[in-house]
Image 1 (cartoon, rainbow, N blue to C red):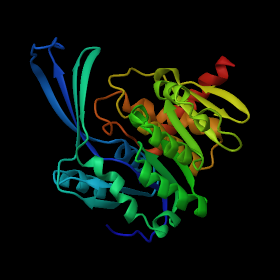
Image 2: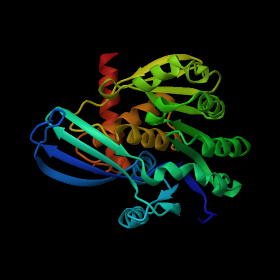
Image 3: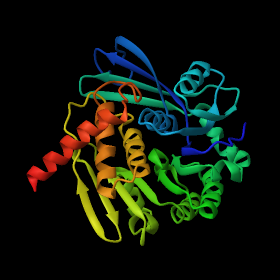
Image 4: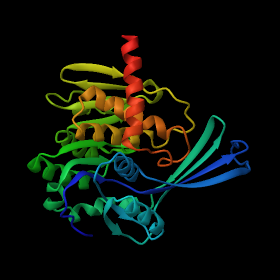
Length: 312
């Protein structure tokens, strides 16, 4: 593990994942089988997806994660993009996702692999790593790690964005208390509709009522996103496009939102830029396949703003 002494726009904490997409002739019932028509391998992972998308949008990015022994090609890919890596090498297989899709039906499986050891990175997080970042992004629910990160961020006054992903469904009672502590220290909390429902059911008050200068974003896929602050709630439409696969759209949204924030856009436009960035990802298989540069995203952002003006 190396310490980074260079200033970065964005420091990302999270996982790496290798995704396998199978197109099948049908989705079989229990104890039945089906023929796989095609197989494609893609790079993914909630943390890595956001790091790659942010880099494509022009941000200087540092990625803090764990890599398995089978991730050498992934590591080279990230390095070639210009992403600075704080990676701890662990013997074991990188996280894997398996997607089986037939037309509009699909099933998926997820193997955590070495990502289960991301919590162990807490001892490798030093103050200088946080001090050198303008924005810090936390992917998934590596709670012990993130408790240390947000404590350092509070001292350093970093802008912190937290998206727990599916990990929010697995919180124990002890985890919920850690989760609340993290929420108190972040600036932006991003969840989808199902994750928000879990927040409500678990009485995670900080997720529902963020108070002064806190931002809650509830993403709704093709239906856009709701933005909640102490000033009220604003709905922001999505960019209309044909969706082939939604995996990775949320990660691209986060990268677009953060990039816009770093470029001093207002809050609503930051969300619009997040939606515009996500619209490219859903058009193809693979979480990182269709990520594009800032000037291309801006074109869709302008079209989205034009549609909003026409509606109003």
